[in-house]
Image (tube, rainbow, N blue to C red; front, side):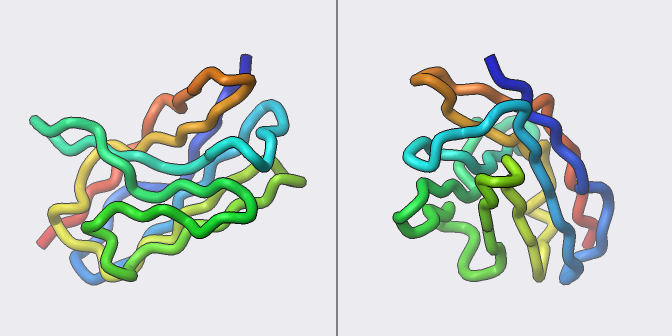
Length: 115
């Protein structure tokens, strides 16, 4: 098994920035995806950004160039830099990683963007 520890998040005004970080308790293989999802109130969970080494980062359609994901396998981390945040970005953000063909989730971290 693997545990995912999330940090960052919080409250920010529209147009502001936040950074989310996730550290895995074990090394996630480069070939396996690691990234972030989110869930807004009353909505289903959706992809924010995810990366497999050697491939382009996959971003949700709503990102529109505002977010950047980078992954450091040596440090077992994935970081999401979010800029120009909008109120509709409000939600719980979850780190997700695949480890030995199983998907693991962090506990989630709240992001609130006020207008």
